[in-house]
Amino acid sequence: MSTPTVAYYTLGCKLNFSETSTIARLFNDNGYAKMEFNQGADVYIINTCSVTDHADRKCKKVVAQALKHNPQAFIAVVGCYAQLKPEEIATIAGVDVVLGASEKFDVVQHIETKKRTETKIAAGEIKLANTFVPAYSEGDRTRTFFKVQDGCDYFCAFCTIPLARGFSRSETIEVTIAKAKELENKGIKEVVLTGVNIGDFGRHNGEQFFDLIKRFETDVNIDRYRISSIEPNLLTEEIINFVAQSKKFMPHFHIPLQSGSNKILKLMRRRYVRELYASRIALIKQRMPNACIGVDVIVGFPSETHDDFLETYNFINELDVQYLHVFPYSERPNTSAARMKNVVVNRDRTQRVQMLQILSEKKRNYFYQSQLNNTFNVLFEHEKSDGFMYGFTDNYIKVKANYDPLLANEIVPYKITKLDTTEAAATGYSMVDIPTKHIVL
Image (cartoon, rainbow, N blue to C red; front, side, top):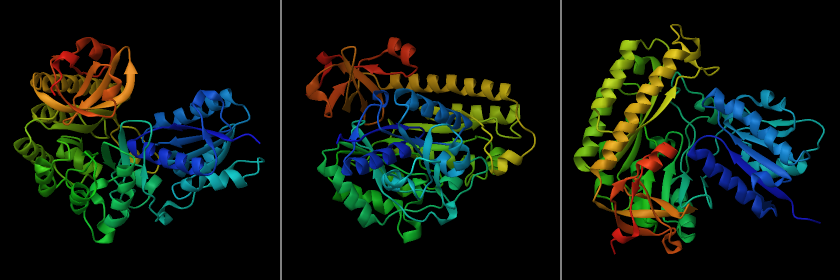
């Protein structure tokens, strides 16, 4: 009897990538061999996102491509889209199993027991999703994404995540550290701590995120940590001060802003004002002048006038931040924003996105230029492309160097020498060049 095979496709965030890797380990433990997506696997696992309607549409396309590679393949759709719209997914031709938030980690059992007569749906009420499964990515990148928290209690006006993942929950610090020891034993060099609302870690256990990162620093032998997206009201001064003096936590933050207008922040039901946000950025730069700070922004939210947008633009322009992730507002069913009036037309949303994307590139390039001729510790990826390899400095500058297999998954001090404008034009992502002769040993 031949070994059953499985392939994976992940849509969405870092959290989804960590969960897909955990599901892959479950299949491996049950005797499945992993295949590339285009190799015609027996089983396809599609882990979905539903932050925007684009992710919904892409799910249908991925299912079609899987069946193109193997028309007899068993198709399982899991994740956020599966929780929000299981009946809709069940109508997609070829889908065999749809699994929601509480059921996705039982996917092997669902596949083994499913009779191929009609699509099986297992997506319970999200308010009953109260279990937490730690997850981490493996094998895809030098860095590992480690899920330490799931769900969210905030219910921002535009967001479906609480509807797709349930209330905030996490394991205890002791259990989380024990899971991190697995990464230590695998020789992982960098861990990105991730979650839906990571700063809310431990709240329901009487613990705090700050206490968790202190334990990572002292109790787990991993070289580098990064904190993924964290709400500005939960990024406390003590966390910032801790990272500033830490030997393991990198000077790199990703802090969602969403709007620079207090009027729009209130409509969005965000839990801070722009003044608090600015104070967090100022403290980071005071303590870590070379820190890299990324920002999430949503434009075209209902009632956002041109003047409101300019308020956001000018606010960000004055902030000492290094790059932006810009999203046009996307109407999502069952959110309060979808019922709001004064809708911003798509043409204006697109124009505002473009303006902020240009600002983002200017800020990123300015930051990169300011870091030239400095020496940084670079963690190199395994990938090779056209004779080059790529990595990131501690403060998240993407670099490239002549390929050397001995540098893969190694942290090496390098002096960065010039901005690679050719690469930036080709990829849309600025990076610096560090020729081998400038290596610092």
